Length: 253
Image (cartoon, rainbow, N blue to C red):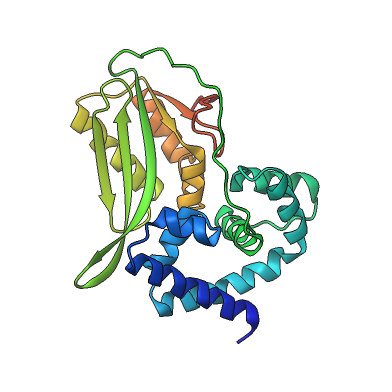
């Protein structure tokens, strides 16, 4: 076992130890120089799962290792940079950057942050209150996945949620397998039935669509889904990647 692997295992057991002693995920993240979500993810892994994760990380590091210095330089200059921003910079400045999933880039960026202790800084932006929309005018959709824990073990579930912007009335649809175009349509239909109507427009967080499942964003742009949107007659908006406040990209389907 090399020094790097030993260091990773020491960090993993440190997270377990500190949490058992009562430290919060935020406190552990601050102490170790990690992102809070990374700490939470490692804590939820057992030894076998973490070992598999390290093996996969080594393969990812080999693929993206030539870009380690570039990513380090960018993160040191702008610690608040999101993974999506770093991914865009890599493609912009390196014409030969390999085609890889956003999740792979995310893991590599988190590895660079961990290695050089570059903590994510909260971005402060000027905002203004958005004019209140009429009831039923807009809904905000999101897809996600979660690992449930029970006495029988772990089980991963996928979910779709739709929140009405004005009333904050919410519908959540669960699935025991990743969404396809058909099941995504079924989830929308179930939400419309639950609300008793269809919002005039639905806003989708593009970053979530692509990070939760690298194919999900494409599924919502298929001919089948476009036909569904046309038939149901509502407007579709995708926020810019990693910037759900942007609300600028309008897709007419």
